[in-house]
Length: 355
Image (cartoon, rainbow, N blue to C red):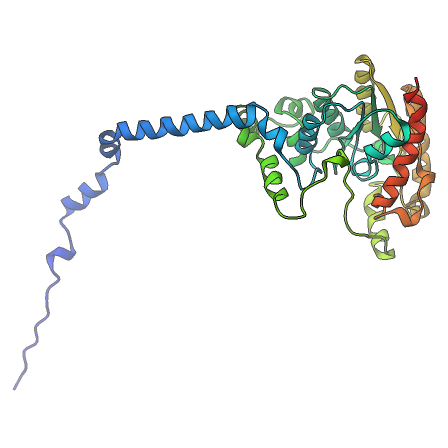
């Protein structure tokens, strides 16, 4: 007997008519928006009112700046925020990480009796960024003396301005254009948005504030911008590796017309025009650096000294106050070494304070 087999046909419900599919693809959310436009408008108005209220009450009123804290002051916006908390600085210290980690304003003040100071330096700063940062701080502080850190590599004739994320934190789009950088539309939009909306413009500061809420991570404001890098990197292998990054080209002759020194000279002229005294501090380097590239460093040192004389700036040299054990690495002092150098700087500034 043959058994009949039947194959079930697909149900029509599994394949909706073409007209239904077209209608479904052609649907838009606008009818729903129009139906609930009053509720949507009210929600947007409430959000806008909350944002404006937070902007005015939390940021524009100065409440945030007067109550904020940091976990690490090693970034430009953090130094500006510190300046707003401490607008009493009579002495301002600016430069790169060698100044950030090498000068403790409270120790200098105790030795020179020259009034409160503020360390406005930050890591990876260049002469271009130092000049811009100094002008930002002068919009808040009214110092009588600005101490500028001038390193040997500032005399490098081959050094040029290099764009970076850090540069965008310090320089405006117009500043970057003046330095030969192409106009970056997204960066321009971000800068304009940050001017209007403080929560966005100060997002880096807000992140640091949140990090400072972690136990034992709050920066001590009494340090007034000074920050000692943790750890020690002075083994032979570590020092050898660091020397390779110290001088970009040993064949380059240091010169007083180097781009970095030219920018620093313009800053000095600007400060003098404002009636502010200027001093130049030469940062100490680990003796191993002189063993390896001492000829270059000696030539650069002579250029920096001549540069200080040419611009009528007091030269502060406290390199003899520290020894090999005082270094954290090839170019940065440890905390104990920074305190020694700061006392020496204070003693050298004592004469200025008595004027």
